[in-house]
Image (cartoon, rainbow, N blue to C red):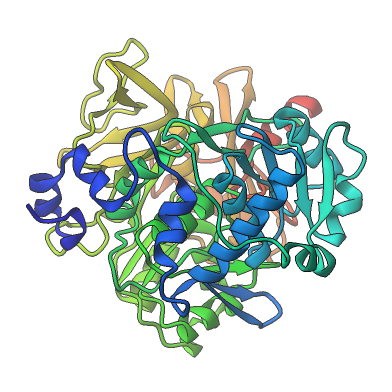
Length: 516
């Protein structure tokens, strides 16, 4: 029987997929498994084999081999054990992508501890809340962040500087791994606000096996790809799909470090000869608005995105710039990737704006509030069938007559006005097609007559006068429907975003309630 990575075709996936075949990618078993061995150590035989290429914001390029990460992770594992860190203890790592970052994440998992990557732009309150939640024995960070992380009871803050690396250099470069498949390996925090901290999503070492579904059918990774994911490895996309998945397959991955610059990203895509790119919708939008894409030559053959839908104007930019379809990859941190567009599949038609179709072997439905299946075109909640029950994703969607799923926003982003159900995402998508709109967000605000009306927040270089408001309202309702347009419009210098770069509608809704 052929391996699952021997073809990218849709028909091949439907015919040959079986859950047990995912284990063909790994050395470990259902009893004994370790993410660090599967992602790093078993690929380290060739000392020149590249694991990660880092495009730094300052223009530097950093190449990191599997051998370097294997050696450093072993040294860090020994270092942690000598400090009393044992199986199940948490080790927080707040570093930008670099050799110390990868050494620390994989070193923690190598010795049986639980790695907890933290976003480097968190302030003291964001750090405190997450550290208080996971209670790490050690927090590794940079000199610049050490002060913000200091003073948390029960956590030793260690600066990953040259002196620390010199201390590690005296330790062995091999470590005996003894983890079981069901041991905890990673805690990952979603990109919520620091005021309402999401609970950590907890992953065992076995999670690396399920992750192959997204690698095979969401990002379309195959041996020989030159892969790149600019999302921070502190978040789900950058960690799971941009780091663990390609490394587990022995594929070199690329990432971005520092303040994001779309021109620097495109320079790296060109210089590294990237053939497979997976990024957030925001990254593609920023590449478009930079106006610099024509200055570069790209070798992209497979392209995917996640995080939020891409507006129609950016989809047209992707078609013109990269010449391959933009393949949505949809899932949540809690349920994983469930809807994909099979990048590289010559027999799969990508419908612009859709989430695609389910991964092989998965049951997925759009359901009404009473749990019954929604009719084609009817908006309901997307649910996944797992362990004999329907699991909610908390996202709205609809299925078209061809079986493609379409996103309609978060369940709390639905706007019901005078009995009409409207999607904030659809309204935003239309607004973003206006040539003078740089960013847009839509929410529902209370209205005495209609229950709710749509309020749009617009970022534009054009002055926000009454003529512009009427123009935007007409622009929207002539493209959607006569009732589906923003009755209220506000202009802003910028829109609130989550640390992962998504528009944070919750902050807008909270501000509206406070003002009311």
